[in-house]
Amino acid sequence: MKITLLCIGKTEDDYIKKGIDKYFKRLKHYLTFKMEIIPGLKNTKNISEDLQKEKEGELILAKISPTDHVVLLDEKGIGYNSIKFAEQIEKKMVAGTRSMVFVIGGPYGFSHKVYQRANEKTALSPMTFSHQMVRLVFVEQLYRAMTIIRGEPYHHQ
Image 1 (tube, rainbow, N blue to C red):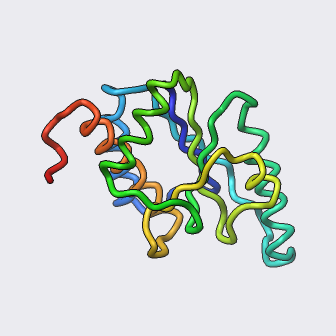
Image 2 (tube, rainbow, N blue to C red):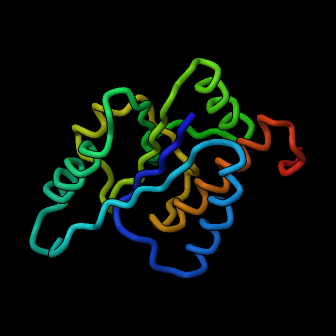
């Protein structure tokens, strides 16, 4: 299975980049994983939040194919512990899902059209994180899920 993490805007903090790179390299041993960055919008002070979500939504939808299983990383989504998250990934693998795209939206969330296209929503935590931190938390949790699926000792009960 191929998993893509689709994000709006670049990662700026070096410590977050290093953490993402660490887990990115580890994930290559388990599945095809890529992170795709959609450049952030410019001059957003001159447009409304709704218009910003719409413009970002168009950019997101342009990167998603009709056969992708799309999961929005959204505070309104279902929260899983690490084992349940691993079970969800494994179910998709067993079901023959070829491509999953996890999406981190912009600062105001997702447009209505992106919500309509999504197959599901997942919350990483009831807390709010910066979009950069979400990237790091997600890649670590995806790596953790792969080790749980394989029965490797990274995750402790």
